[in-house]
Image: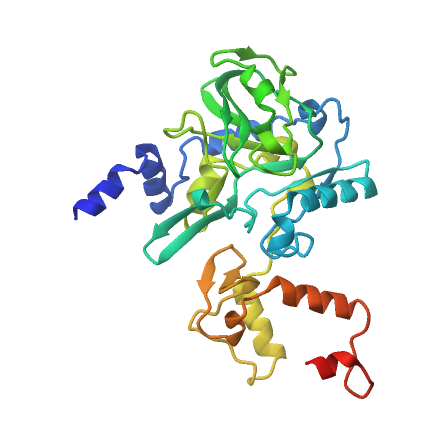
Amino acid sequence: AWDLLRKWRNIDPDFAHFSFRQACGFPAHPDREKYGSWASKNNFSLVQLFPTIAKNIIHSLDLSVSSTWLGHQREFEDLDLFQFKIDSLQKKMPERILAGGYLEPRALYNSEAYDKIGNSGRESRTIHLGIDFWLPAQTPVHALFDGEVVTAVDNSGDKEYGGLVILKHKVDELVFYTLYGHLSVESATGNKVGDQLKAGGRIGLLGETYENGNWATHLHFQTMLSLLDYKDDFPGVAYFDQVEVWENICPDPNLLFRSDALAVPKGISNTSLIEYRKEHLGKSLSLQYEVPLKMVRGAGQYLIDQYGRKYLDTVNNVAHVGHEHYAVVRAGQEQMALINTNSRYLHENINAL
C-alpha cells in the first residue's frame, strides 16, 4: 500500500486532473476546445516559422514503427546514414520541407529514459507529440506570434532536446505554449527567461548532431496547453495508454498550419483487418490470441506492434536467432538483389547451406 501511495504522490496533480476528466468523458484539458476555436480562426504559414527557407509545401516523412523508409534498427541508429537518407530525399524534392510525426508511433526512442516498469513489465514511450521539420543545421527558427520565454536551456543527454526554448503565449483568457527542440545550445541559451519575443522574432538556430541530443538535424515543434510541473524539459513522446490525455494537453501543431500533408494518417483498424481476413483468407490461416495482435516490426527477442509496444516472443523459433538479425537481413537483401530462384539451377549457396 505504501509503495502505491508513493507512486501516486509522484503523479503531477494537473496530469491526474486531466486524466480524471478524460475518464469522465470530458476533454482532458478544459481549454482544449477554446484553443481549437482560436486556431480555426487563424492561419499561419511555415514561411513565418522558417523565413530563410521560403517553402510552404510539405513532404510527409513516415518514421512510424512500420516505416520501410526507416529500415532496420541498425540503420536508423546510424546517424550518418540517417542524415544521408534525409539529405538524399531532400535533393529529390528541393521545393518541399520534409516533415511530420504528430501522434506517430515510433521505434526511434530506444534510450532507457523513455522506459518505465508498468503493471505488465517494461513500457516504452513511443507516441510522438510534436511535428518534426527535417532541415539543415543553422536554419533560423522564428516566432509565429508574440510570446514570453519561460524555458531556455541546454537539455543535454542522449536522445534529449539539446538546445530547448519554450514560449508562453496569451490570447485574451487563453494561455498556451510552444516548444522548440534540437536548437543549437548557443542560440537557445541566448534567450533569457522573461524575455518578450515579438511575432517574427528569431528564437534560435537548428543545432548540429553533437549538441541536439544525437539526432539528425531537425526542429521538434510542439504546442501545449499546460507545462504540468516541468521547468527545464517537457515530454515530446508519450506512452500509448496515455495518448488520449496527452493529445489534449498537446494539441496537433497542424491546427496552426492546416496542411493536408501534415494530417495524422488514419490507418486501418485491427477490426477491419480481421473482417477482411475472414472474407478472403482460408480458415487454415488462423489468428492467435483472443484479441489478435498486429505485428509490424521485430527486434531480437521482441515482436513490436503498430503502436511500438514490445512483446517477448516465446512462441516462434525465429527468436532463437533474433527477429531481423542484421546479418540474416543483409544476406537476404544482398542475394535477392542478384537473383531469387529455386534449386533446379546450379548455385554454390545451396551447397553451402
